[in-house]
Image 1 (cartoon, rainbow, N blue to C red):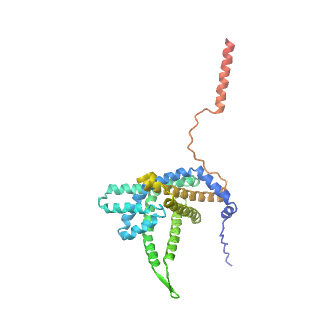
Image 2: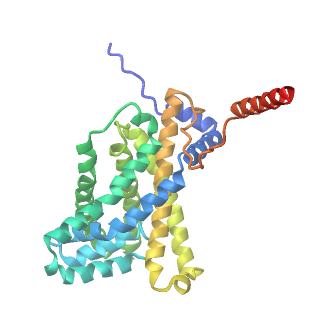
Image 3: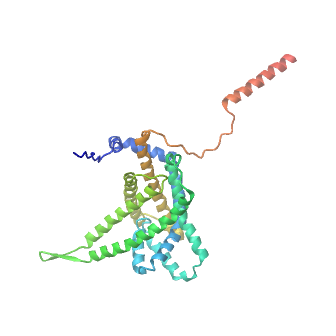
Length: 334
């Protein structure tokens, strides 16, 4: 007889979360605040704003050698809608303007774009290391690995966009087909749009999960990475549709910021996306704490309070006692 170990569909950690979901959510929020999550998200959003255009320029320059530019820009516009809702057309327009003058691109400008395109990943790695501080204390990552990681992820994004061009072309071609049933012609465009959205959400979750899987120090299990990726991805989908509805219905950001509208909206989108990305990382970190030291293990408190330079209470009492003794001895001598 061959003993086959039973397959556990629900782990003890998951059972504990299902049993006490509110307590786990509250623990995630407390740990996120203790790690200064909003401050980290702001840093990630700022450097992503600096990196997005050089990164897209490098990707487009490489893929334009093998993919037709109209197809490439259409795929890129659709992909950017998942990251910067409502502002993809403006970014694609800037990329098209740059490609018209790419003959003036030199080695200095190329090196500068490589440097700025890698900034966002470097800052994101540092922010995630704060979330997974319990891993950094145990394991260290080699300096060369951290240096090469941003460029490897740039190549990974280029390959993902290259594959997306073929998937998009096939789904759009599928949507133009019609099916004849009982003498009625049914268009497949609705089914094509639904399939395109489902594929987009799946790719989004997988990309976020890959960040959780490769970026922290040490190897995170694929199950934990998918838990964090699904959490951040689904939350971003809800907020992304809310942002699209707000900017197209009530927003007066154009009147307030004028020519800076695109930069402000993109920065706001990056801020929200970075916050959700770090929240997903915090979910993984707290999920790991359940299996090791328990869910109530407090996170390391990070703060920026001013240093209190006043003397301790005990030393102050000593000084007051010495002054009192000096006064008594001086009175006795008189």
